Length: 304
Length: 281
Image (cartoon, rainbow over all chains, first blue to last red; front, side, top):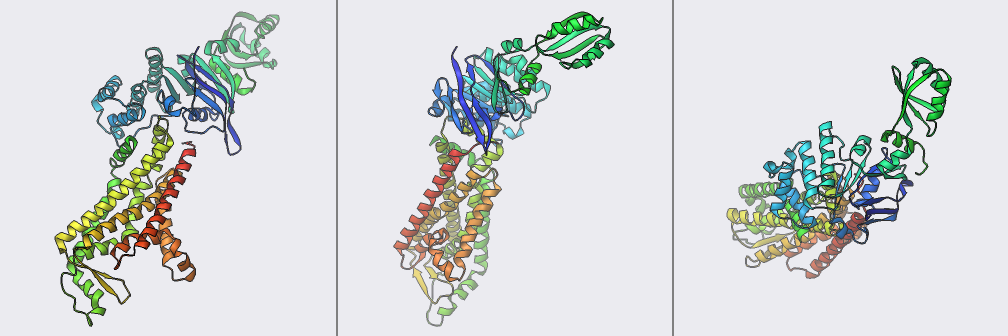
């Protein structure tokens, strides 16, 4: 597979503190690559280095096989980035904003601008100042911006921040469209796990500036199945038993259903204990949730 | 060139840019109207020491005298008006977040900062030209032409520049004023690359200009000794020399070079800072 984006020992230090340290990630062509991490983990710092807004303290970035530092202009002509929210000149019209953007990238025709504005439903307001646009309209203009220059790689930093559920859904649909219909590679930074579960094909998890997991979403989840749903009768003795077991964490219970988190490979041991204590177990099955995976890897620091 | 045109388009699409033109129009119109009403009295007061020994005739209160009179306020209000835009060139993009819009595109930071700097200089030139055209056109309408009387306040000397020579001198004087004011634009521009808001560069630039003007005018030997090294000294010298009799070309050349060096140093510093700047916002 062709690597579209690679970071090699990428590091950034701010006033004696490492925001990102020795980061090695790989994004392949066609990926919807999710870059996960808790707040302050170093996601935005990494994205800003990839988009040349921040200078790395050490390490390098390769995009399309070319060193970003040495071929900045040529590389960025094939990339579109939206950091946190699309930024536009509010005192100019949507048309003028896109014209400026286009002329800074490769030069675009009026027809191309009107086409993308039409695609996102903004053609009737093309010549209105962006100041008069609603939040959703600005976001759609951001999509138009991403489409206009026909980039091969789109980098989105927290694209759903400040959105209502409908807005979030629209952004997710936009990501799917760009990936499946337009064959663009998407690099998506987020801390919303539901977003990742719904759209990502590969992911990396970062914490305290260091990479702690990287791979395809399905592979990583298969490795980490620690959340179990157990159907037991009777309920009360089962709860008593769990309280006495330090390696079992009770998440919730409802009638005869228990939700627990346990270490890998100990499900059968728990089952045996239930039976030996006269508790009937009618079902026990694992949940492969990204949330569990994420919480586990961000609690410990061991690399996966 | 394309980036310069884009920057110019953006600058002249903002209403803030036109505040300066409105202020200049107001100052020039008010001054010339008041001079029309009470200018004779001012001229009489100015020439009173000479009237015992000389007979002065002709249209003394003419467009050139009025223009020179208004130009004397150049170093006070024009710098402030220049900082409104030059101090905003980079910092306003940081405030609005559009700096990211710019810097993640293919053009290099050096090309972007150069285009912005040229736009700041272009705006400065346009502002001074507007000032000149308004002064002269309105002055010609209200006062007509004539010889220019040159008098240094507090000194017993007076000189005349003939009517045939004055337009060229005034023209050169305004060209020199553009060069002088470009230093103010450069200072504001440098501060703009360092700040994340527009107020800082405006206040910072005005503080620098005022401090140097005040220190240069203090009647203390220490500051008199330093005065030739202040950029404000050369800023004023440069354009005023074109209205002196005779013109001291060596002073003009020296001041133009000193101001040019200031411009180059300030721009290179701005470029260096901007190239290394981390965009964290």
